[in-house]
Length: 282
Image 1 (cartoon, rainbow, N blue to C red):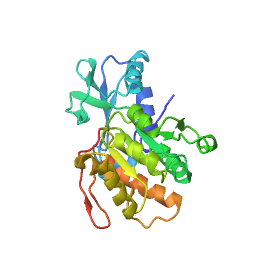
Image 2: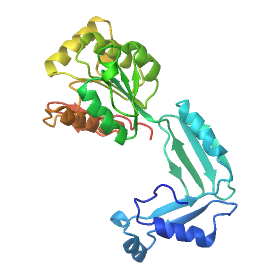
Image 3: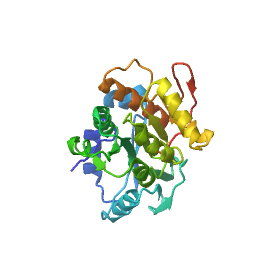
Image 4: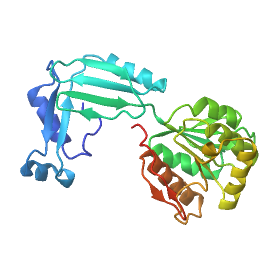
């Protein structure tokens, strides 16, 4: 049974045929290559004339995968190392700047917990953001302590957290694979979340509102003794300046900026440059 994709569909049939002909019951991992010459590149339609090297490995049981899954459930970043000449496999705790590596002999693959998006407020904008974010592989949690809002939430596969925003942020914004978006327009709720989020390791913290509202928000945070360096982390107005008007358009702008920050891309805002940051762990 063939599950998943390795190239978007252009070499899967041939790979299945190779594995069937050669057999997968081999003791050591091996490399299957595509695009090694012009004929192959044309035949399989590899983009930009690229080359694709696949490491084929036999697993005798699912337990090695379960170990990784348990680490991910605990939101731990791990590296899996495999030596092609010996077949030896080992797992190691990974630093946030660890990268995929392959030198022809040793392959190091990084496995990180799911990207998490914590939305403050269960309003209409949050619904659009939640729906789009799931397509971008975010685990979405909506913090909504207001009794009149939480019961009406209807987006599938999204957890509703009814704790106070500061409590939810302290519990959930615990690593660099989390983003926090304050979307309620209620200072009493948004500011509670931001006070905690701007101290957290979250890779992105943003707040909805105009430039004037965000300037006032920064003044309020400063009056609450939040350090200037923490306040400088705040993205507000939230999202890229693409002329968004409707909730769906605003959601697109927000997720576009999230994607850029997550990938360490520097973007020019309306009148300022958002500096490039260190690329978040994959």
